[in-house]
Image (tube, rainbow, N blue to C red; front, top):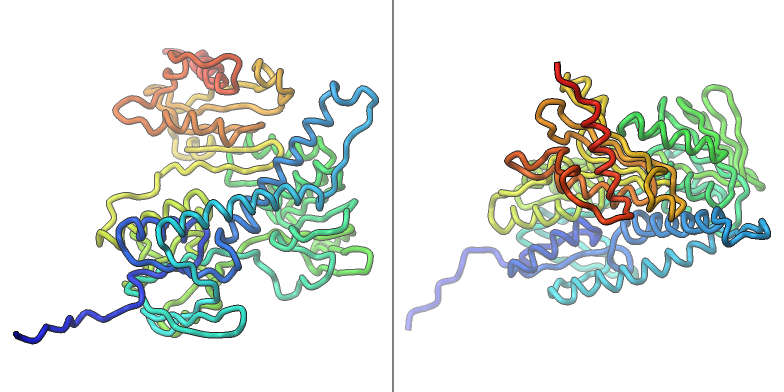
Length: 475
């Protein structure tokens, strides 16, 4: 018998290793495993889910839900014949969030088990383009190798060096989840999505809120009417918003925090939340060893197939920047997996990714804003439905808010949908489904010719469509 020929193909421990188990890492790991590859996932935390599950999307939305229900309860006259209102503290509502996190961890752990993806707990660092050194919590260290490596290590709150985050009253959007005392007054620095969401939560608990915005208006990337509606709602709830401000220094004291602004203003509160920006978690990966460079915000550049400048290393999720959404990260992970398995990528993220901002009330949008359409000189018309006119909203006592449809004057094609109010992030998907239709299926007339359940919030689409069509006129 002749001797067996030895393959020249290098031998690796795994076909693919994914660094991180958030939405991006999970999407990549599941696709690769289902495609028959031997896959491992490295997670620095003691359980899977990433920042999304433990510090970001899941806990903040669970907090928001509890506070929203508390507001709804307190505003319902049926439950308060004696004018007494129920109060809850931040630490009390955290218990509900903790329960949701446990359920999510069990669910997501099951995905890895069923698909035989090995979970390795520890901190990963590159040794070379195929090898990783993993340091466990007990200090032990070992190496793993793979043909392909996917970086999905997410992001963390940006922490300026001059801010003392070790002070007991100074928090970021991760550490705020460990808040134990019951503040009467909070300063939130940064009025982006995270800052606005936490401003809603604390104001809903009856805490005095000062929201400091470094820009000239709230959520400037949103349709102007929607951000104006949120701004008015915040003002009407008793919140103070200061636009166009930057901090000079943040002074921690025994009984609170003093914020010194560059404009000369000074503000004091029981506690302080810094929510101005995020940083990619790439600084601990030893990227210099493999010649991969992150930008000043710790983010990696990738091509359309989510491949970095090193051919066998891919990156997905928050660590590659925009759109920095959990929903998009999962899709990016799946698409990166497809590129790895097939050698090319046929699919891509949808052009119009819906945005959901979980303030109280919510804001959600998909497609173009009025400002974008005007700048592009696209002739559009607007159809509006006020929630206060809908029977379902009147029954639920959720009258604040509206739905706005933007559509082309001639073709009637839906160009953008914007919603402000309770359940906005759910309502938006009805219109999104119609926007995605091809061959003339995307038209505002769909909402006029279909029949909606009654009473529902969905019938806002019929009201808005009729309102918009009534504005049209022929020369």
